[in-house]
Image (cartoon, rainbow, N blue to C red; front, side):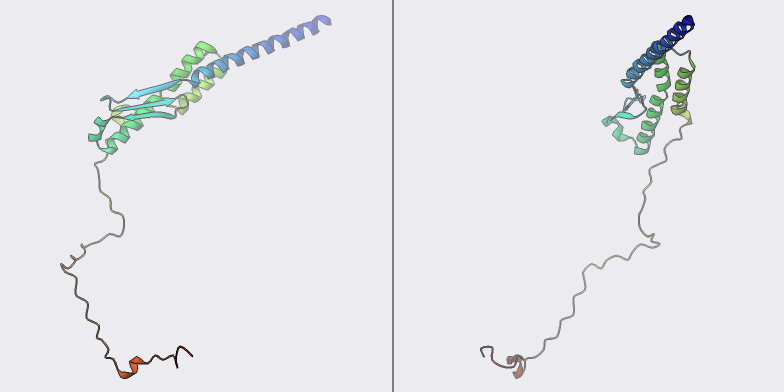
Length: 180
């Protein structure tokens, strides 16, 4: 019986050691991924985006050369570059896993599959619809006809007729002297 107890204790110790080693490798992988960033640039180098390992935008640079572009085109390029950068995250995760925990176990496969579903491949560039031409929008009630033009000179107000003073105007209607 003592052999079974010793063997059981040895087995529990081995599991504990394996779990601790695996946890340390996953922590190393997480620390490595924490510092990862991905940067993408437009073909004409007017726009640059950087995302972190969670896919969040951490830096956006739009050069002065982009000022000649329509805003719809610039925003479309920014979104395309963010998608392109995010689509590289699963590859970075797979590299970090291969170097730290390995990619052969079921947990690693699940983590990579989750990253691929969260950050799918970016659509091909030709699939992106060209931005619509710039339009001017009016806010407020629509007018069918333009309002009539304002008159050149404003009309003069009619003079107010003055009342003639009478003898009674000198008396105030307070009923007596103010000194009494």
